[in-house]
Length: 256
Image 1 (cartoon, rainbow, N blue to C red):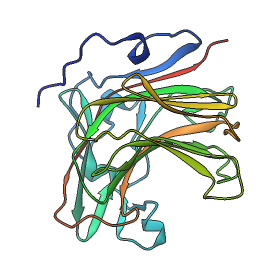
Image 2: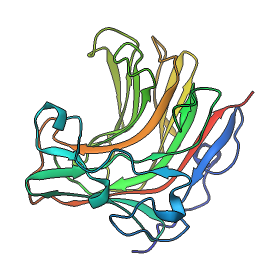
Image 3: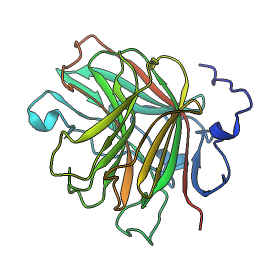
């Protein structure tokens, strides 16, 4: 598999280095060698990555009785410069994974390894069209108080449909959120960027804004999880299998 080639990015697509108003705190392009399925993060990536939930941990649907869960040991690998999720079913269980980058920010929360209050998050990704599997790469409140402290997701969506961004507002109502559609597919390379600032969340796809939210925006520290799972709401067919790929990820904090 040849590594995807990129043209020179515009400033809005810049991945590596500081930006006006933003100081970079994390950068990864998976150029430190391959890691086979079952061994991620391996020695090469362990300083900057966690595989996330252990094999067999119920995912969102699995907690509600569906036959689905997180299995990084059967799903995650690095090959030819990309982090790869091999999404598939074994023994009747559809398998995903939710790895997370590590960029300590002890001033915000010493118990979280990528916690920040506000930030800019950018990923270059693509996925096969896999009905029943879903990406929800998200910022989750350190407090675990949901929906009270909100949630931010981008890219999100069933892999057979279109990626969207979503802001779950600070509220007592789980249905109090807003979605921003892209009308694109997961099957081509895209750069998804979230800018989370005081009182504002803005989503960009390939350098173009797809929407802004400004009411009841989350305002407590949150941590990043690259959550990829299934059965929300419908489970995939047992024969459905394919890949999600992450070419690079970059994270910035607000410049002082």
